[in-house]
Every structure is written in C-alpha cells, then in structure tokens.
Image 1 (tube, helix red, strand yellow):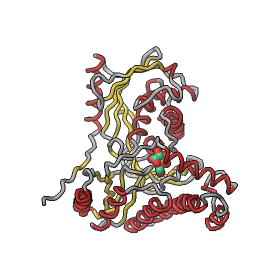
Image 2 (cartoon, protein in one colour):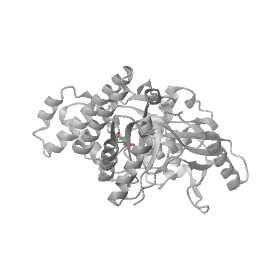
Image 3 (tube, protein in one colour):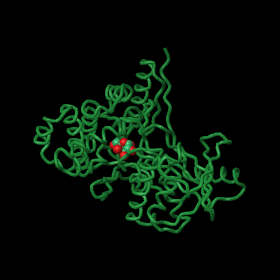
Image 4 (tube, helix red, strand yellow):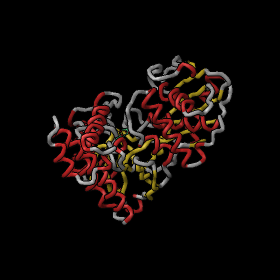
Length: 405
Ligand code: GLA
C-alpha cells in the first residue's frame, strides 16, 4: 500500500494576495478600489475556552490572511463579492436595514462590522468590496475573525477614524468586531480571535488577559530552539454557531453565579469551588467544566513562565495536559482531533492538543524542526487507515496583525 499524501496549506505572499483581490475588484466593477487591507487567521498556543470566562489565552497571528479590496460609497448601499463564491454571487445590502437577524452567511461578518461601527457612534458609509482569502475555511483558524478584522481596518481607514493607528484603538476595533459576530452573525464567541487578528505582533504570541483586555507580547521563536508548531487541519466539520459552544458558555456563567463571582477567573481555590458546586444538579458535569477553565488559565501562566525562562522544549507536556482536559473535562474534542494528537505524539511530537472551539477544526503539535514532515506523514497515514478524509497541514509562524497592504 502506498503512503498517504501530505497536503500543505501554503499562505500567499502579501503582495500576491493584495494584487489578486485588487484585480478581482477591477474585474467586477471596472474601477480601482480605494485600497486593499488584510488580516490574519490565528492559532492559539494555549488557553482554550478561557476568553469568555475573564481568563488568559496566548494566540498568535498566522501568515494566512483574508484580503479585502474596498471602495467607499456616499450612500448606504453595500455590495459584496467573494472570490470563493461563484461569479453570480453578488450580495447587495442596505446598511440602514442591517440589524440582528437580518443578514446570513459570510456577508453577516462584513455588514456586521459596519453596523457595529455605527452602533459605536462612527459615521460609516456604504461600500463596494471584494474578498479573497488563504485562511483555511472551517479549520478553527479564525477565518471569520480575519474577515471581520480586515473589514474593520478598511472601514477605519476610508473613514479616517484613526482607530487602527494605536493598540488602544485596535482594542476598540476588536470590541466592535466581537459585537458584530455575537449580534449579527449570531455566534456567542468570546473575543480571543478578533484580538489576535488585530493586536498580535510578528514573531510574538499575544498574552491576552480578557478580564481587562490588557496584553503582553511574548517573543516566540521556536526555530532557534530547533522546534516548530505543526498545525493539523483535521477537515472535520465544526460549527461554532451551533448549541455546544453556547451551552458551554452558559454552564460557565451559571457556575460563576452559583459561586458568587463575576467570572470563573475569580476562582482562587479550585477544591473549595468544586466542593461548593457539588450540591447542584448535574454537579459532576459542571465541576468538570469549571475544573477545565481554572486549570487551563493556570496552564497559560505555566506556558508563559516556560517561554520567559527559554524552556521551550517543556511546552509539549503542557499542551498534552490541556488536550486531556479539553477532551475529558470540557468534552469539546472529537475522534479526529484525538487521533491527530495521538498519532503526532506517537510519531515523535513533544506534545499536542486541539485548538479553537473544538468538535472538529485543527490541532497543534510541538515538533522538532526535522520531525515536521514525518509527523505530518504519520498523521496523514493514521487518517487514511481510519478511512477518514485527508487532513492538511501548516507550520505556524507568528505573523503580522491586520493592516493596509
Ligand atoms: C472559538 C471562539 C473563541 C474562543 C475559542 C475557544 O475560537 O471564537 O472566542 O472561545 O473558540 O478558546
């Protein structure tokens, strides 16, 4: 039997992506756009399902970006086209009529950002836009936040709002994008993805404290330690807008309420908190959810301490512990993610875990540089042996945040 092929998900060089989307704009409307802006997808090193609990997370921007060519209009009309859709797929909207429940599909992320900017008091006009992207779609690598953030910096620029010029302004833009995703796209996500896409820095992971929005840029240069972060897109379907994510969030909020704290971040004595939750209905499930969140926040601190101490090779064990917690306590993994992590570790990875919301999407594995290819081959083979569709791979490099191209 021949070995399973290994598919790598390459990113585009920025000038290539920008030229491509600008040409699509001209082909569509016969005039040049005002400009091209782009924003990255992200992968989270550690700190999963902590962002809606006031906790810590440590994402990094990927070189894979979503590109938007955009031209401002003087009326309220929004016309959208996507290179990923058929030529007939032009979407036209009236910005004045956008509100919760009015737009579906990918246009909700775009129109939602314009709506949210207006809700925040910024006088935003209609626009024509074409979107193109090399962020793997549906892979749990934040293609939706990349789209929102690219549109946010584009609208910021063409309306001269000046928000993208400072980190404080970018934090405001992240809030605006989060509101768009929560209220117009209808996904109750926590905000890590938008903050990563707008506030990360090349060569660094972003330590984000979601309690107060403060950040610290942590240098992340795995290659000098002979290491790489392999991302495995399992190609298993995941859908954040479905009930599982929202129900995890609701359980955490109810548990915080029972414990008399604003968020689970305030839990300082885990054993005491678990004992207190013991009387509630569904006590065991609730306790496991809380244990994941509290221990995961501690793991972010542990990883940051290891990075600060240059003890990068010790990260693997923390990643694997996080995976077990996400799988057993938070119950957001799935057979494809578990196999991806197990096969990677069996093939020599130092550790690994599922990333993002879960129930599909991607996993990461910390590997020695020279092991990236063989580990990817072993995971691809394990999927082929299981009779599943082939996964795809990329090696994560901490890249630039959203900006003008
Ligand atoms: C998704 C959400 C984020 C975060 C992660 C889990 O990616 O968009 O806000 O909650 O899941 O860490």
